[in-house]
Length: 452
Ligand code: ADP
Ligand code: CIR
Image 1 (cartoon, rainbow, N blue to C red):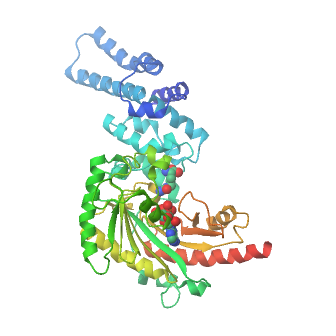
Image 2: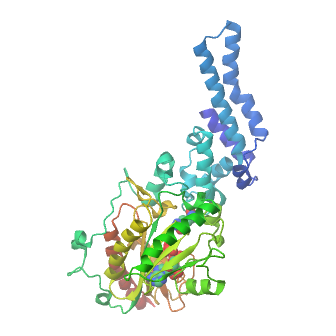
Image 3: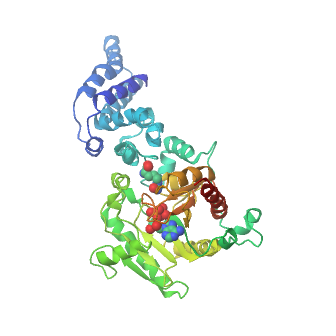
C-alpha cells in the first residue's frame, strides 16, 4: 500500500489544475501519466508473479486464482487512480492548504482505494462539497441514511473531531425536562423575564429524514416530488386537526399548493420559509440544492407557530416559533409535534449510535437548533458580530444573523444565538443550555457597556 500512497501523491502533484467535478462525475476511463506510471510500477508485482509461473511451468488452480485476484485488485487500483485522479489530488493538497476542512483532514486514500468501485463512487459524492469548496469546515454530507455506518472508518473520525467526542459515540434521545430538573430554575420554567428580557423571538427546530428515501444529495427529481406528495398526505391530517390546522405552501410549479415569487419572498422575510438553496455553494456541490424548486415547500399551522420545511438540507425541518417569554412553550410543543409528524408520515431515519440521521454531520444526534433573537448592542457596537462571536464561543453558543446562517446581524445589534452542540447531548439539555447561555451572554453584554 506504500506504493499506492506514492502513486496517489504523484496524482496529487500532476492533477492540481484539473477540475474535481470533471474527474468524479466523468467515469470514462482516460489514459494518462498516472495510469502509465502505475502500469510501469503497479503491475510489476503481478507481472513478476506471472513470469515466475511461466518459467516454472504449469500453474496450479490455487496459484491461478491468487494471480487473477491480484490482477483484479491491481486493475481496480488503476481504475480508481484514473477515474479519481483529480479528486484524490485535490484532497491531498487540501490536507496541507486547508487543515480545518475535516473531510480532507480525515480522508484516507488507502481506505478509498480498498472500496468497491460502487462504494468509491458513493463516497466521492459524500466528499464532493469539501473537495469543491476548499474553505469547508465540515466538507461532507451523507447521501444515504446508512452512509454513517457504511463509511464509518472515515466519517466517525470526522464526527468525533467536529463534535469533540473522545471514545465511542453513543447518542441518547431525551426530551423530558423532568429528567434535567437539577439544571432548571425552581418550578422548571425557562422564563426569560427572570433574565430581564421582554417578549423575545424563540425558535426550536430539528432536522429529520424519512428512512424510506435517499437523503437530499442523492435524490432524483422524481424522489423529491414523491416525497413532497407523501408529506402533503401527512399534512392533510394535521390540517384536519384543530390543534394544528393551517395550510401547505409549495414551490413546485403548477400544483394546487403552488405559490408565486412574491408570496415566497414574504414567507422568507417572515422567517417561515427557507432561502433559495441554489445560492449555497456547499449545498449545490453536494447535490442537495438540485432540481430547485421541485419538491420544496412548507407546512404552516393556523397560528403560524408550528412549521415543517420540506426538501431543504434535510427532508424535513420541523420547528416551533413564538414571540414570547417562556422557552418551554416552543420546546414542549415541538416534542409532541415531532411524534405526530412521524406517525402521520413515516419512520424517521435513526441510527443506534448517532441518533437522528441528518445530511450534514454537524446536525447528527438531536438535529436540534434552539435559538432566540437577542439584542446585544454593546457587543456589536462596531457593526459586526466579531466580539459577540468571541464571547459566545467559550459559552458553547453560535451566533448567526437575522436571516439565519450567513446573513448580517440586525442594525439594532440583534443576533440569533443558539447552543452549538447537537450530538451526545440530550434535547432537554440543549434548551437548558440556551437559557443558561442567554444569562451568561447578558452578563458579558453588561461588561462590554462598561468598557465602551
Ligand atoms: P436553521 O436554523 O434551520 O439551521 P437558518 O439559520 O438559516 O437555518 O435559519 C432559518 C430561518 O429561521 C431564518 O429565517 C432565521 O432568521 C429564522 N430564525 C432562526 N432563529 C429564529 C428566532 N429565534 N426567531 C425568529 N426567526 C428565527
Ligand atoms: C461546511 O462544510 O462548512 C458546510 N458544508 C457547512 C457546514 C455547516 N453545516 C450546516 O450548515 N448544516
